[in-house]
Image (cartoon, rainbow, N blue to C red):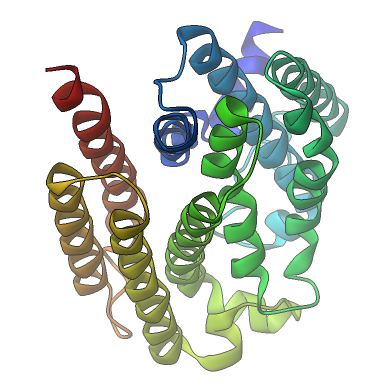
Length: 291
């Protein structure tokens, strides 16, 4: 069982939970300060962490399960745990069920709205893996799914949704959609052959990278808009400048005729970006104001 769990965690890239977790805490801190005029409690932070682990683990487990036949035919993904025979579908189903139980349990410890929004969250977690079978807007659906992290953090501490929360949600959704478009560029030929849908497969790599740049330009604008809508100050503004620079550098790494640095653009830059926004938000709303 331990060996299977280790393989499962490797399969879902458990460490990539760090992509969205910082934004969940950005939503929690910003929501608590903006609406409640307080900081999140340690207990709230703990339940948010468990909810995030449950949500992402369930989503990635479902993705690998739903896409197992496609993964087996794709040379890039044929060595994933299920097509490679390292895990059976029933093993993954068990871990997905346990992950959903963790998500529901953690949400129930927060507030009633967090529980009421669970069906919507589960819908997005499940439907995303199917969208590339019928629409090239699948990247936006993934964005709307990952964007639930900061929105969930906000709801967890406030029990409500405001316009500021919506702006944060859309901003993170556009960030996610942008880097997912970049990531999908490596599977253009396979997607076209299999009849799968993506922005790169529909419009070509050059135009897809241009669309990704547009998404990330709107992301930068969204981060800046939060500065206007909330009590965030120049510390956060400094973080948005760093984040914008990271997005710019990310797009300089990937060119239509050279995708050799795609993994660096996808994994490294976006992991750093989410951490940067969290750290500067934390400094602005927690460290500086405590003085």
